[in-house]
Image (cartoon, rainbow, N blue to C red; front, top):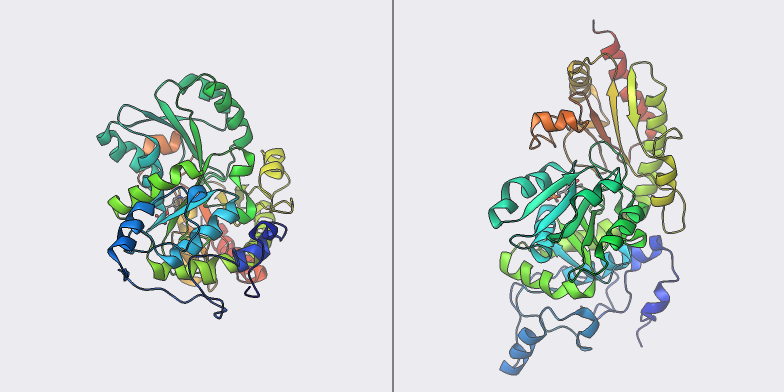
Amino acid sequence: MPKKARDPQKNENYHLRTRLIHGSADNTKWDYDHHVVPPISSSTTYRLNSTHRGVQGFLEFGADEAGAPRHAPIYIYDRLDEPTRGMLEENLATAEGGETAVCFATGMAAISAVFGVTVKQHEEIVAHQVLYGCTYSLLTNWLPRAGITTRFVDLMNPNSLNEVLNEQTRVVYFETPINPTLQLIDIARVRRLVDQANKGRKVPIRIIVDNTFATPYCQRPLEHGADIVVHSLTKDIGGFGTDMGGAVIAPHDLHGLLMYYRKDFGGVLTSKSAWAFLVYGLPTLATRMVNQQKSAQKIAQFLDQHPLVAQVSYPGLEHYPQRELALRQMTDDRGRFAPGSVLHFTLKKEEGGNRHAEAFIDYIAEHSYTITLAVSLGHTKTLIENPYGMTHAAVPEERKLALGIEPGGIRLAVGLEDWRDLISDLDQALTHVSQLS
Ligand SMILES: *Cc1c(COP(=O)(O)O)cnc(C)c1O
């Protein structure tokens, strides 16, 4: 047996941080016993040494992994299946504690696919009322064209579910922490309510959580009762801001459907990007999150006591309104509190506008060495933006105001710089704004 072929079951005894680096040491996707780093595979099509093998490959495509053949996969064509992406999928499923993962070209391709395989014409989605801007646009502009309706509710008060769940409901969808407000939704509580609603139903309602903000290092929604997790790999899992990708982590029964959906809609993750996530992203995730989180905590505390700052939302703050939930839900795999690396804050005296926030962000854009004005998050570099006008531009104005997405809100996605330098640049920009009339 090769040196690294350990019992995959035993790998579960290792910490998440270690498993993100070594993955499943023994896998059938690729023979890389002599590579320390797996090679980048780059082949759109695969040589088949007999028609029989080709027929077999098509027969086995999309097989539920539990019933998957014991031999190495028969690869046919990149859009169907591919070894580097396959290895990434195994590691992502392990990281989230899920049964199977399927990767897509972007986070939005993954989110479109998860609805594609769980909801059809005349059926309904229930979603939290604040969502990533493009997800909101997908639910309100595109899915209605396929006869799929979304009912938006405030899942921060999960009892509101009882008013909207009905015979047509197929999924309950939300992000936690919520982008951009950094508020939390209690996954276990939603689970209990959905379990009640599922009693006697032919088709059970599934709970889908977008775990992009927390990453599996800080929160594993399946442990709290979610059925499916989606990710934008473009953010913290990628970590370096070089590649786009998305993933759906789901039970075995959805594996084949997701693979067929991806094959036919075509939003497949390229092997080159899969390799970057596999080799650079996942193995450094724990280390990056630990450092980003430490800086986010220091920055949140600094902003919290600054006279010009009106309000800071960060689950790590002691007076965070949902402190008890944060401590219970956002933990690393050893149970230590892990409040993540994104924070949101507002400045005083905005009077419903964004004059100070704009001056603040523009000052940073022009003068800061460490903080970059850019959308996205989970990068080595710290990024700042104004969600109201930028990432959440797709949400209608009245809705944004009603939902507490304030014109003057500032989102900071903390990177890997020294936190002292970040605070010093923020402090300078605050001084600049406090001198404005
Ligand atoms: C970025 C993001 C997405 C979309 O991911 P892409 O990779 O940009 O398509 C979805 N959800 C959340 C919470 C995000 O931050």
